[in-house]
Length: 117
Image (tube, rainbow, N blue to C red):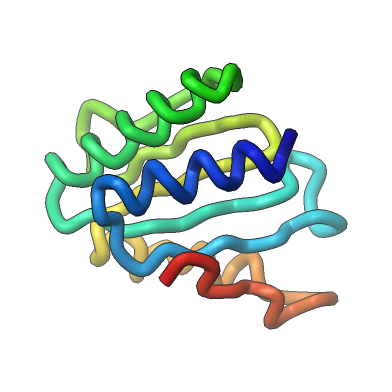
């Protein structure tokens, strides 16, 4: 189930040309999800469109989001798909918060992979 959802997230991100896509395997680091996917959009409109596409693909796969945050401002949109959490951000917001650095600290550091770059 998680693998199919990962595939659908990847398709959605590629469909709308999200930038700098990184998948972080956080199994064993947190109980909130197995994977965190971080991607950039080129503008607030692009961020919102990419998030909408992720939502559409997840619903089509029979796995609607548990929650979506940040759509109004669209500088950082979080799509909670249960086992996978997707963050679509403007590059400056992504750099400021540094989620990849945050989740790659500790045991298993370096497992962050540029999954779909």
